[in-house]
Image (cartoon, rainbow, N blue to C red):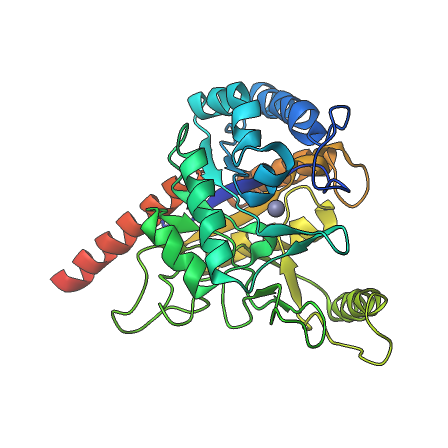
Amino acid sequence: MDNREIIVIIGCDADSDYNPKGNRVHKDENIWDGIEIGIPKLKEIFNSLVQTRNDPYPNLTWLLRSDKQMDLLYNDYAYPVNHFLDVWRSLNKDGDEIGWHPHMWDWDDIHKQWYPRLDDTKWTNECLDAGYKAISKHFRPTSCRTGWDFQSNNIFRKLVEFRIKVDFSGLPGQKQILYQDSPIPHLYDWKTTTEKFYFPSKTDYRICSTSKECLDILEMPLSLTPVPPLQAFVKFVHHNLRHNLNQPISKPVIAYNFTRTEIMRIAKHPKLFKRGVDKKFKDSRIRNSTEYIITYFHPNELLRNDLFSISNFETNLKYISDMSDKHGIPYRFLTATQAAEDYLARACQNEIILDQH
Ligand SMILES: [Zn+2]
């Protein structure tokens, strides 16, 4: 039986274009061009790919902000949900999924800057409770990606409480710390996570639990693309040097761990993305299996023209389609919740087949 197939899941962290300098947004300050200008441009590209190449239409998962920072800026936890409601409704009507992207930003009034408030469970829970309630007035999200891909056992517990079915914040093998002696142990920590889907352990969200002590939410970590050794080393040195520019000179810190892979990002330079696509098709062929490309972007990347751009996005989509033709392996787009349901149905089917033998 031919089981070869590629399933592509594309999420959008629908953030503002940048963080405002103050804790209020002024009337003439527009920080949402990525959504207002970028999304219509992206839809034009999708429609043209369908018409000119007969490619499938990519249904995406839009992860909307609804959290305390939005409330501080606009007096409305779900400001971007409400302000662009017609956009989300129209995308949703066309088959896209609406998920949730809560950030744990708080305002530091002494230093006059935003900072990730990650060490205060009570504050996090208030942010999540009110954020979920606000977005749920219009949509009932069942998928999530968290700000900075930060996760904790507590946040996962909250997501289960809200009946979120799937999270795809996982960055397999990656960890970043903020600075030495920081009250926050890390900005994100997925060091022990792999690309395999799993139900997180209640006591360590990064791994699956072999006992029944696991949470009822599927983690689908983002996909990795291989990076050649020299390039990986240069990136490791560069990132850590840059990070240390902001550190006290007496306290240098290894903020990023060394990895030979990086996350597949659909709007990033095709040279990086293509290696990941090649690997997925190769794996599918060798293993006779379904392989997943799980990737994401930000709206402001659609307006940039550097390492990230809308034309990179288009080139990367075309490459997936071309590789599908070349290898004779079909591919399809699913939203995050659809992919999770599809995956669990297959897992269930495999169990039944195994039981019968
Ligand atoms: Zn974000």
